[in-house]
Length: 313
Image 1 (tube, rainbow, N blue to C red):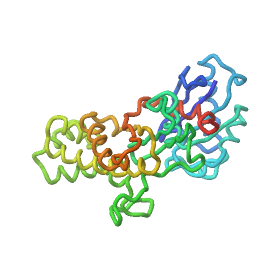
Image 2: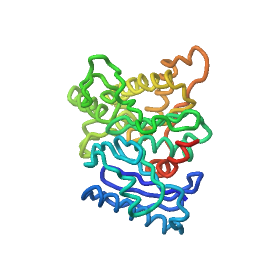
Image 3: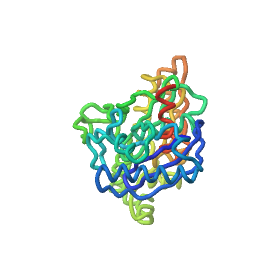
Image 4: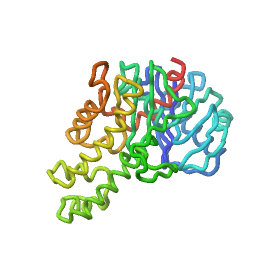
């Protein structure tokens, strides 16, 4: 059995899989951070809970994988953006409660591993997962093996527009500033200000907010202002995606995260067309398939569980 733990900003999720990545049991609980040692104890307690639900014991566990937002090195958490963990030996702390092998991974890498074994990447050797949320996460698998290891890919900080929008990373024009969810929301709000007649206003009032769904819902209803917002967003998403494809030459790229749930006709279909125009493969050679990630919230759990397989294949 393999245990995977997905550490989110507000919740902890855990699951037990078999060696193929089939989920045997899962559970979740709110994240209540009260210090590193207590945090490790909470993770171990959740792991024990799902292991018992799956009918296993510690002797059945090959490894535990823990996926976190931020940077890790070996068994140490170097930095996380939402939890006060810095240079914490999390694997060692965890093993004081459950004495099994422990691997740490970045959450985007774990999502890629999950999709590779049980989702959109099945049967593909060279595969990229891009998560479209507050930022742009990237998990890269080449020749069946997770790339990056301790240093996950920061694809969202490729410069898309030299001298462009300022980014919290200190650079200007990063891809995240044009294709992550906050960028889409900013563009939607600007369009609403310029076009008070747009359906976007009614939808935003009904939702109580403007989020990544708003422009796609309005565009689906035929609103021209929203259609323009969506086309601009797809163009920015395609530019960065084509850069990655030209560099890595994957067989497939799968998109996950909240924005990726937009209607296919407004997101993935035009994205496929535009990426096809931008990629060097238009001159011949292998082109990458553009897919939607399949596993949803289970991707991080399954991928964390199978980190040992993805790093040793």
